[in-house]
Amino acid sequence: MATLFSGQSLHPEQSLQSDNKQHKLILQSDGNVVLYNQQSQAIWATNTGGFKPREFIMQIDGNLVLYDTNGSPKWASNTYNNPGAFLNVQDDGNLVVYRAGSQTETTNNALWASGSNNRPSGGPSNQIQAILADHNKYRAEVGVSPLRWSENLAVSAQQWADHLAQTGTFEHNRAGQNLAQGSAGAFSVTQLVDLWGDEKKYFRNGIFPNVSSTGDWEKVGHYTQVVWRNTTEVGCGLSRGNGNDVLVCNYNPVGNVTGQSVF
Image (tube, rainbow, N blue to C red; front, side):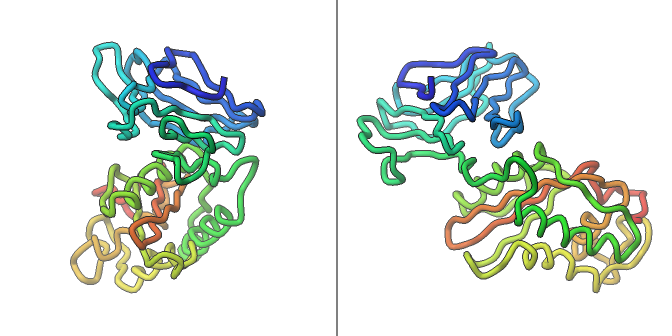
């Protein structure tokens, strides 16, 4: 079944599968709802683990909601006031909530979409390679090991990038995260990463947070995260909305730790 109709729900370990059998959406017993591709790679998730889920339901008001066993909502598509809306797992890997009565599954009929049809799968894309290469260029300059790509970090980064682009806000949702923003279409991903790299002109090698010639570590905080020696993984997401492109990169282990050296 590829569609969750109004009033239907997934319970723990139940799943939806695209018609071509290449994408599966599952409500995991840890409380996370994850979309996997044919290679069993996560390409989208609610990132809501750590609790006992009751159901992932397409409510009759049109809102897609994840509830815990206490009846508390943990995630929602915020598509309420659209009675009869339904969720579809598309063959291209996109999750879409469509308005009721949609005869054609088009953008005009979509109320919400995960955007996971545009996510890389089956190996590094040119965009991933560009982001990694630019990060590792700055790391090589200071003699630290290159970063590797994390799909798990990328999924959470993409979700936050989508949120920022859709809401027109610009704020962090976790430690170990870099944000960049520019006018839509005006910057390549490497140019957005270079906005962080350009902070090295203010960098002073020392023990964090005493790492800026200005006396303010936030003037170099994006750069220090890029080159932080103990960080080994990065995953990023790019989204467009409200006239801007937003790049979010998440890092593990997190950098900018007080009392530690940058490299």
